[in-house]
Structures are given as C-alpha cells and as structure tokens.
Image (cartoon, rainbow, N blue to C red; front, side, top):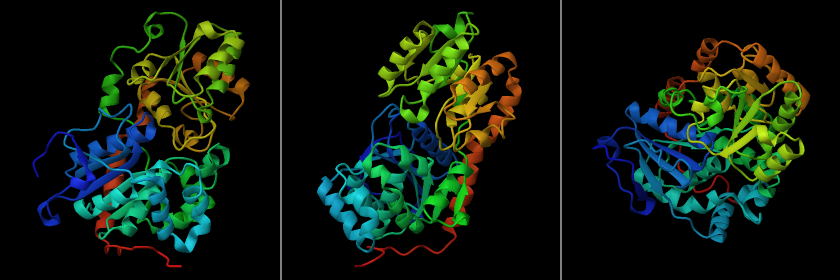
Length: 433
C-alpha cells in the first residue's frame, strides 16, 4: 500500500484493500488527543507499529486536543460520527440484556454516560469496512466500546484492552457518578477481550481483584516512555528562565492539575523546604485545580518561588536541567513522567502510591519513596535528594527498561500470538434475555 501523510477520514467513507492485498492492520482506539500520558503512549505505539511494517489506523473518539498535530506520518486518522445519546444507550442496553444490573447505572441511566458510547454505531461500521486484524484500545470506557463494537460487527478482530489506571482508587475517589459504578460493567465486559494488558503489576493485581478476573489472564506491558524524540527534546530550549539563570535549585513537577496528582501536597512540602533552604518550584501543566493551587501558594507565602507556566510540549528540557523531579500523586497507573525525568538524568522523589513508582524505582533504589499525603516526609525526601542526588547515568540506565522498543516488542509478540489463534466468533450480544 502506498504510504500517505496522516489524514482525517470519516469512518462512513472508509474503504481498504482486502486482507490478502495488505499487511496486518492495527487499529489504535482512545478517547481523544487531549494532553495526557495515555495519548502520548498510544501515539508512540502507533509510530513503533508503523515502523515494524504494520498498517496503522488511529481513532480518537474526539480527534482534537494538545496532541492533534503529533500523529506519525503514514498513520491514518479516522474520524467517527457520534449518534445521539438516547440511541447509544439503547444500543448498549440491547447488547447487555442479560446484565442490565451491571451496566445500568454507568451506561444507561447516568445523566452523562461516557461520551465514547455515542461512537459505537460508527465504530462498528468502521470495523465492517476496514476489517482490522487487531484493535488495541486504551482507557476503560474506550475498552468497553471496542468490545461492544465487535459484538455488533460482522467481523471479529482480536481485541486487546489496555488498562492505564488503578481502577479501584479511580472509582472510589472520583466525583463522577458513572465512574463510581463502572467496576461491575468492567467485570461483565472485559472477559470478552482476547487480551487484557495493564501498564504495571500493581494495576494488574488491582484489576484482577476488583473485577474478579483471573490474574493469569492479565499481562503487564510497561509503557513506551523513553524515545529518541524525548532525548533530543531534552537538549532544546528550556521552557522557563529559572532553568538557565544559575539561581537557587529548581524542583520540577508536571501533570494535569487535578486532585489525583496532589500538587497541593507538593506546595505544602515545598513551603516546608523553603524554611530550610533556598529553592524554587516549577509545575508544568494545566487544569481545573489551578486557582486552588495558586491560593495555597499565596497562603503559604511561597508564591514568589513557585511558577506554573501552563502545559509544555517539551517538559524534557525542564527535567534535564532541574535539580529534582517530584511525583506527588495519590495514585497512578504507572507514572510515565517519573520515567521521563529519569531518562533525562534528573534525580527523582515520589510518593509510594499505587501503582507504579515502587516498580519504577525498584523499591527506592533509584530515588526516595515517601508515604502518600505526607508533606513532611516529601519535604525531607526532596532535601535528601538535593544533598545526595543519584548519578544521571544510573538513572538513565534504569529508564532504558521502559523504552519504546521494549514496549513495541512486547506488544508485537502478543499480537503475533493472537493472530495465530482461531478467530473469535462475531456476536450480536453475549446474552439474550
């Protein structure tokens, strides 16, 4: 097939060569192109698969966001058309007649079910027209969408669902009603996937426990975090003048401004640190919690030493120049940004949150692990790291375990294994009445 530049194609107009005239096709399915670790991971996997000779289609249900211009060349961007919410709810209900109790609250009667449901009809159309061999989906609602679409479709691609979050904590701490009730739906639907992948062993253990899935059915493939682009960008222009002004050491953090990341804790820890020594804190990101963070910084009288310049497309240039990187989260799936900082040679401190940091830091051998929510312990961990940083070469070597090649190789081994198995049968619904 002649390679073309990435383009937007409506699913309703998609047509492809037959299977015997093309290489194996992988569809990558995710909610959107918004800023975040999942989007970055799936973009890097798309690039890796394409480089290995697969044909790759890319479907973000909402094809816009911070990464909308980052799609690799020759990967097709497919745009789905949403249907109205009522039609989508009825479609899901017909699929799950035998399990309405599990799906009703998050998918049928919720005031705002996941927006991904509205793309079920057109995703089914895409599957019938393009006949991908593999569907790799990411994020819980999109994983459910992929499985439902195959049940409706006339074809049976292999479905790999990838879970990127600690689902029990996500459902427990969220304010969103549909998320609080999503676990029973996961328990019902995920067994129909051909493979279930998690981004850390901690996420795998949690998913098996709360969704009553056999642990042996879940495999861990670490995210493709370390790329050649990351290493190149680390040497580019710094995203903030503090990083090049030879002033007090700069502590850096990055992520969405949302409760899970607990930047409030980081500011409290930084305020404690500032009573002991000069330092500055740079938090890269954006989100709904910005006003709350700014108010706390002012209340703690450290606002002049804290900068929050917004989302950065190149945080690596900050990591490579910072004195310490801090991950202050209450929970993670893996904690990609922690690995990115290490790949840039930046000493790190992390909360010992589920899941990821303990796996990444090998029980604290590559940086301090401190209790979740403990500002005093976090301040002490930062101070100790400023005084006795681990050598950059040691951190970079550890980060190489999370390279794009390692992740792509693991996914390709899984894909080839699935393609040698008998094709799953197409299902209109698993249960009838």
